[in-house]
Image 1 (cartoon, rainbow, N blue to C red):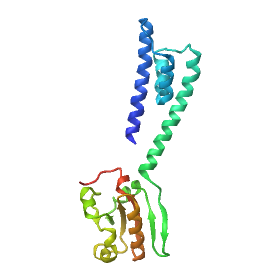
Image 2: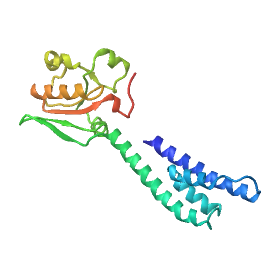
Image 3: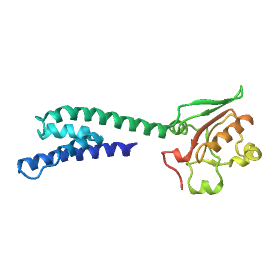
Length: 207
């Protein structure tokens, strides 16, 4: 997400500099940058930089084409970047808390990585990795306990001794964590939260 902000800033500074360069070329009567190229860069995400370049360098401000199209490019670029930013946040944060499975007494809930991270600050939290040993060794969330989904039926009560403790479950992509969470609920665990796969975990992991 922060990478997108950096890209936006760098791109628009570059477009602003391009307008400044064309102004220098105009003053020195050198070969100019095509107006179509300047407009193209404005509409390709650089509308903000083009707008600043026009008014900072007093360049193209008397050209009707630029007075009309640059504000349009500015609005278009900000809208496009805003959409990309929001979609990026959704992919990182995931779906807000949602009750997926309710046995009547206990509920299995799907949460986002951001919600899981906030819950991990509590003392009464157990982070459960339901992948296999090799996957766990390649990288896992700090303080996670390994219990492969295939071993839950036989070993859950040995590893997860308290059925009232809050358990945060994850796997690689979210499929096994979903299956494991439902199994735990059916075994009587009361507070099970599935936060999906480690491939969507944007925070630090232990390798």
